[in-house]
Image (tube, rainbow, N blue to C red; front, side):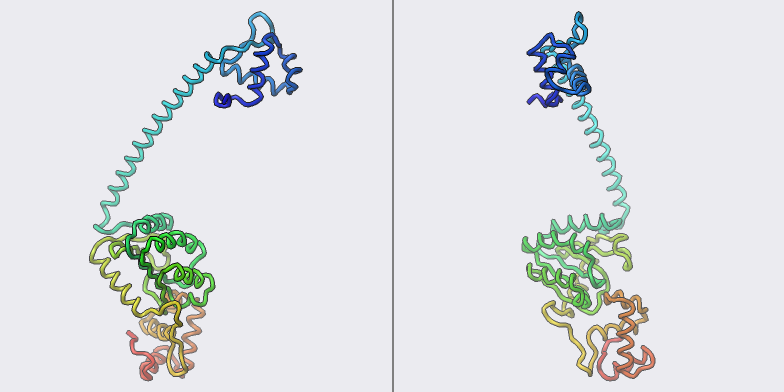
Length: 331
């Protein structure tokens, strides 16, 4: 109880000793209490600051205990002053926050209707977390880039679990290459075990998250989604993104099934996608990124296809694949 006054146990013992021995001087207190000289002086200083003791006016180094009522009143007055100053500071902080909020809203109003710019990975994650908390019925996502980072999966797990526990329909499309990455595949299987639906396909055009078919989040830059993102609520744009997701979902293969593999007379889905992307003029690096594999792996796949088709160039490989009926879309 007495600790509320700011007294430690030693100071409390010193005060009570002075009550019991009102004429005790410094030396007698040292002897009775068995304290070090520095400890006793520190306690006496503290008691004096709180107006709980005073030095005798007639006897040198003799300390008198004072009725705590007087000291406590002074202490209460000090605390009340601090509280009042604290309230004033809180009010100033509240006013400053309101001004900053107004500035933030004003800046947002300068953006196109239905589009909000999110700066940096932290703001993106915070907004997606808030978006996830407000999802009512459906959450859809495209997750390109192949193997997902441990940090991203760790950040996503609590929210994914919360969505599924609330009965939200959750659908995610990854690229086929995650089937060869143990940690990402394990996470995808965990999602399925929790009630989500997961599919894969050879490549994905962009990273995308859609909540309740009303709000979408897309990265500003394809090469680095952590740079920034756009939160879109414009009806027409979101409807188009939902249509894109639905079309890709129909083409994707459920995680529990294996993607189509070549049988010696055809191309696997991944190989066909490599030819399509190369036929559209994409570099090995772009193809690799779209497939979620290394550039070296993308070049090896292209070389294997050329060898199987006895082609001297990638263009010739595409033409021969179409001629054999292995490839029907090389736009």
